[in-house]
Length: 566
Image (tube, rainbow, N blue to C red; front, side, top):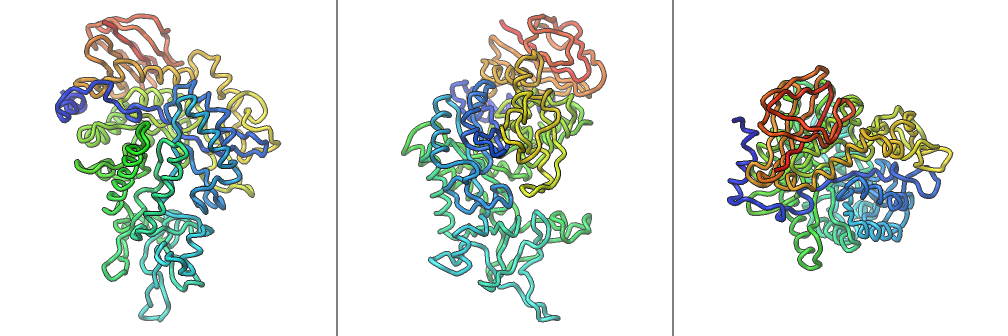
């Protein structure tokens, strides 16, 4: 038997006893949903989404089975990086509304039993933040609130140079000279996003205050942005070492020009995750309520993500985000999918019994563009059939695709294509806004791919997505921590099988044909199953039965869910 087929057994052996479904905390099996607030729903006719618009649409999230939604930044910002450059961490930007609007959203979310997770951007602030202005002028103890350095003198020219060769994520030096302070400041991202100095106890205290402020307003957790970049390695004498050059990249202004051994995933960052988890645990002990959760955005090796989760004695982020399935393409086979799953499971599941699967986000092309529109449902089936939490980017449940955009006064970003307005109905602006023009264009295919239309189509992407969420609450799906509660394998080059069972009374077999040919499978089981979910490419209908001792025929790009009941 292969390693992946033993993972369910290994999980049970590691925890010593068989876990019951009642031991599952809400986040472990959650359906998470990312909202990009500018593009979800406009309530005031200015062409930009806002908090009141989100409140209006919370009922939709309940309808499709979402457990919690996390919002991209809503905080006061000059919008140089669309909210990831924060000038005040405890104020709502007027574009999105007011704190009163936020509180009203929270009331509605609680009424619907929906959890709200906020984006938390600790690595940097805006250069227009009061903290940075105070640090420039060395005021009120803010002298070391950011990362400052005198730089170094060139021995040949005598000119002052940056402290190190570090390159920004967006290209160019990470160091920029400030004339007022007469020092360089560090920015791993835009020059308008100076890095906070987490070696300063005052910075860490301020950030705990930020967490506390939003926890007091009822939020259920935080998605931590850009986790690997929070700390940099500094020598004992205060200097910074050059990072080694990658011999495969010849562009010194490219982020990939360097091997980022001093500016990513430093040991102090791991400890900071434990500190923040401790804070949330203490908060829950004092205030009660459900577990507050931390998601970590970290494009890091799985061994590093394991450390962010915990080290056996300390706990960190419950959900270090797993982006492996986002790397699949239209050419990916079932064996490729299994390889992506294995990469996570053989470390994170065997060590921590945790899993999460991210479909997309605001920085990545949509599934319809990465893999093809005909494979949107396949990926949605996979991420929701696997054990653990699923993370869906708004619009992926209806098969939205990237939109070609042009530079405007509002935006000129190569990521705009995946950030266009949500498609609600086949009416003007897809019912996103009553404005004459929206901040980004609505997709020209909104009349076909929209919520209202897909509600009325039996095998639409939306209906398939909703059915998958219902399965996540079944006895078999909730037994994923039990011995043998799940398995997965590529039964052929192109066909993925996932099994979910409670080992007593209920079993599901999920088959996904990633290929463009008919697949014929035999001898899969000695039981008779019922079709409970079929995608648009299937020749079957829910309610039909099949004896898996006989042949199972899968059409190209077909996905099905079969159920056996004792």
